[in-house]
Length: 363
Image 1: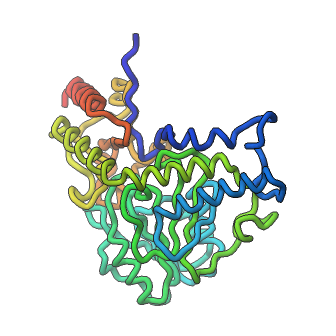
Image 2: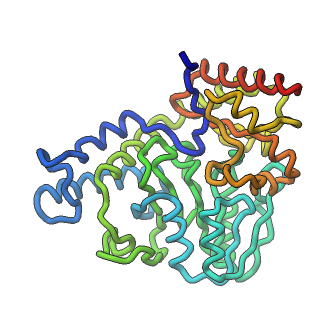
């Protein structure tokens, strides 16, 4: 019998919370029920579906600042594209460790671009020079590869002093940390906080105008056309409500798992800040590690060499390069991602397997 598979890749995606699944089921009915109804229809079944969508909207809004609105999207990538591509920008500044869902849309606008550097700790200096004439500053709350938590409140203040808007990729922080203070636009997605894939949201501060990225029937207040899925919305809402309720308990649990992992993998160095980081993300490096062999020898453990989006390219991680690691050191790095349902036994078993595997490589 094969060993139990241990999932330590929660930055890539999280398992669906049972509460989220339960919330979705009534809206996934077949012909025998009315849960399949279109929430944009005016009949009774459609109005019931629309009510479920609005309940979910309020639940998601509970994770975000007051004084704004939630626009449902297909995910954070769409939300970031809407925030960046539907507004006129003269100059966009973004951190050197932003996700490609920020960088590529920014490039596509034709605006002048400024990359804000990070130090070896993976943090943007809150007093970094931002060029005059900048209209949008984009800095993520928690980095998906190395887990560093950025000084977004101060950077948002700096952006406002320049007359710029502040966009925050809140994907890895939503439901785990307090919302990014001072942001004008925040992108989130359900599947990184134990909700379903295929739905996210763009939070827009009151008074900020964004345009329509997807044109059609004018749903979502004319800002995001397309028929909403009540099931996906309900799952997102339930996951958001649960995350808000469990935020402190989840943080304590993950902090304990990170401490346990560090005690077993004591020879490994942490990439990025030791302190300004989300405990559910542990990005480590050990000189000489052959990553493909390590992954083969630890095939019953799901972990990553970097972000899931770029792990198949063979190129060194852009994030690890930005913090000053040479390509060889970057390739000697692994990312362990812990979650709400990860047990101490699983972390201990996985880390001991990783340590045994690197010892078998003669390291």
